[in-house]
Amino acid sequence: MPGTLQSIKYENGKLEILNQLLLPSKSEYVAITGVEEGWQAIHSMKVRGAPAIAMVGCLSLAVELHNEEQHDKKVLRQEIEGKLNYLVSARPTAVNMKIAAEELIALANQLSKDETVSSEQMKEKFLGQIEAMLAKDLEDNMAIGKFGAKAIIGTVKDTKNVRIVTHCNTGSLATAGYGTALGVIRSLHAEKRLEHVYCTETRPYNQGARLTAYELVHERIPATLICDSMVAALMRARTITAVVVGADRVVANGDTANKIGTYQIAVIARHHCVPFYVAATLTSIDFNIPSGEHIVIEERPECEMTCIGDQRIAASGISVWNPAFDVTPAELITGIITEKGIFAPSEIINLKPEGNGPEFCE
Ligand SMILES: CSC[C@@H](O)[C@@H](O)C(=O)COP(=O)(O)O
Image: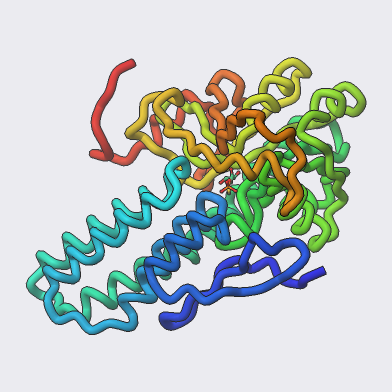
């Protein structure tokens, strides 16, 4: 079993990512030497998971800027804006890259107007900001882990241990480290309150079977893999304390886009009276979108469903619908676990920073 869970390595203008297409059988890093390779790595899913996508995108720009000399601040500003907007286009559903791009473009605008800042200083401050994002994501994930574990432990009597269901991959591989939903599971395990975690395969791309299972085995967390279609049977057969999943985009009314299959798990959880939590950093919240029906859902190639590796498993000639994400409506979500604490979906709007985005009414 390969020995590392660090998906992103960055130092001094050098970026390497763990090629997640090869996991779990091979642990191989690939160098990303600029924005074009960053875009390709995101698009081809060598790196995936909303926070990791944003970090690799921004760091691929950092690599390019690090290695170039630019004496004109206006040209630098234009280059930054153009390349960040290009990176946003690599995958449509996760919002983190878009939010990071907006923040960095605002910083570039401000620095380019500031006459006390030279082009070299502008570049340095800009690169410093990108590097700080990596550290902040890790810190935020640890806070999510603590808040989530405390809330879930609070729902059980005495010192009873908990059983969790999770979907897709939200761990170290999808973030700067530790993870969001998987961070909550890690924290429960660290506090010795986790009896067992059930991770779904996450058809058709199998992030659960390939990546989450890999992380859980690596961390020696007691875990069992199930097919996505087994969640209802599991909830009937065993007492499940809570479901915890991640998010690619949380919108203003608390509706949440996440990996395809999340919605059906939320429906099943409601039927079985199992609390359903979404764990996400504030960088996954899109206040500009009023409700889930407006979220653009990425559709992936047919072959991801019809084949396993090179082997075709579906009857040839059958048509295929392969949306990569679905939307869980706010009313099925018990709480959204963030680095600032746990909020009901209806409270998410209160986290909106002053002046961020248009006002809308529903
Ligand atoms: C902390 S990662 C949260 C989500 O991005 C994750 O659950 C997910 O849906 C990832 O989808 P992917 O298609 O693998 O990028």
